Length: 497
Image (tube, rainbow, N blue to C red; front, side, top):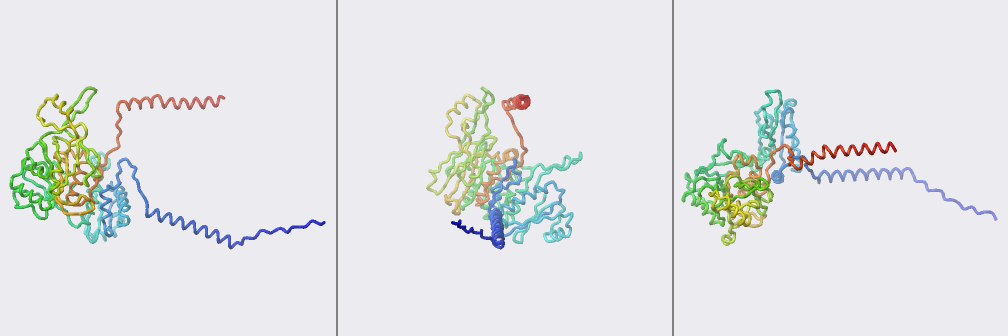
């Protein structure tokens, strides 16, 4: 029987058009996915600054302020490439653009190359300075920020052929301050009380750094002498009292109480070395007792040696809007500091709320017999010390405990130390400025601007103790040579075998 042949199926031919269509569909799909990924990445991204000094990282205060901008803001930059901070300004403005999410447009103009465009802008904004600067334009209002306002430059090397050296970059402070001026439209006024030997507001004052810092937040000072007025002016909503050396008179205290009762705001820094019994009595009425003592602590200076210090190392508590971004940050309070006793239960019926803001670190005790030199007594009292004393507090009458609810109220911030804001202290401790900034903004009901101020640039340094240096010597002189010797021995042995 003849073998039956089974017909074989021929493979179905795939037409070239179908292949081309499949390839085209794949390419379109890949391009679509790439476009979607780039679109999502462009709108939703995160930036990190890993530099040691975070020179261009914007502070929380600036970021929150940028979120309040309603319309477009334009920045025109007139910087010569030879200006020492040109690159710094460009990098900083890039961070502003990212943080503002498209609400800031930046135009860079080289005044040495693009003369026609520079003249056009100069004529429009009435710029008359030859110095490098930038112009900020917002809703028809404009403000200039000069290069000299954004940096401190050391010119001492010019005499020996060296270029200028930037010792401190203050671009964020200057630019954000100018933006606040434009967005808010007018400056807030802070009354500064004089007449009791408080530090003056002159350039040579001991609080000149603090004055400049506050003014950079769109705030202006107005001197206020309560002897010369019948009442605190109605346009002053907040007053500042720093370290009065003499007590207030009965008439001044009446004006102060009237101001408080009309939802006034007060920042009070006390000098415990001065007797201000009437001011203390006013605080006592509000549930804060200023104690007649001094904070001290014993510090170990050797194996068996102890030294007594009256400079207070303290930390900020995070329970208040003023200090929530300074929570657990430490600061030094030089000179004498007394303790505060808070009695919130006693004044709760009067709708007064008290919050502790600053607390001395563990180991500090409040000494009532602070004029004696009896070290034995100090050591005995230190062992009896209880909880760490409070040295700063906020008081609010009226208002709401819910931060989201804005209700008019009387507000007061008190600290039992007035030297921590002096120039010699704030140049060593940035936290003092951060705290004052938070306090002033809370008193002015500008909670959205409360935050840590831009950091002062510091060089990167390493500090090694004696044990660390000893270990480093062993690593460099012994361990590292042994590692290379072991590697060389291993290679020699492998070749030998």
